[in-house]
Image (cartoon, rainbow, N blue to C red; front, side, top):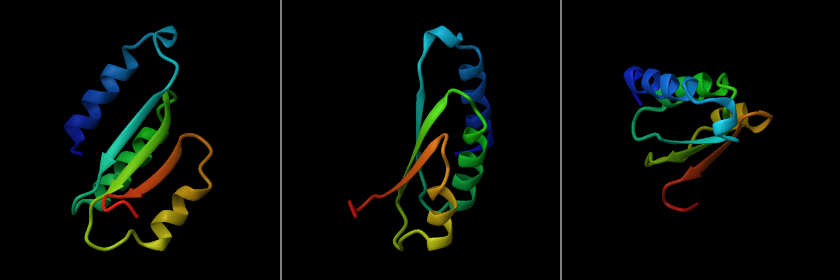
Length: 87
């Protein structure tokens, strides 16, 4: 996800009135861009309206254990990494 798209999404989210939503779920795909995915997770973690972040891991190798561990203890938003091959 590039910076422009992140900024656009934030502007949309910030213009939503609090009573117009209960929570927002973000789905990110990580094909050959894990550093951008990490930036996006960090950014969306600071948005109060985001309750869940699902990461679809599309790489040929599984995500590094330290990356998975960095999201395990997050309370809000909750982050889950799903492997694209269903594992």
